[in-house]
Image (cartoon, rainbow, N blue to C red; front, side, top):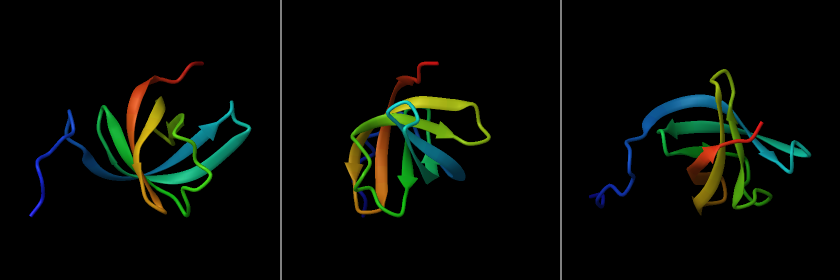
Length: 88
């Protein structure tokens, strides 16, 4: 049995390529976007160890560039909330 839904908007399952961009592109990590809403996403990576708590997320082939804040993490998954659009 699952608990009550706490998200402010529903997430939709997806399988998209993403990029985690850190320090103005000095570090870029590939990830998979497994679900997505207007307020957040679930990201899959080989490891979350080097990923900071706040970063730019780019969804490849979609015009999505946002600042993401980590709300929870496991060894290979990140649950993120979008803070707003990424600066140009």
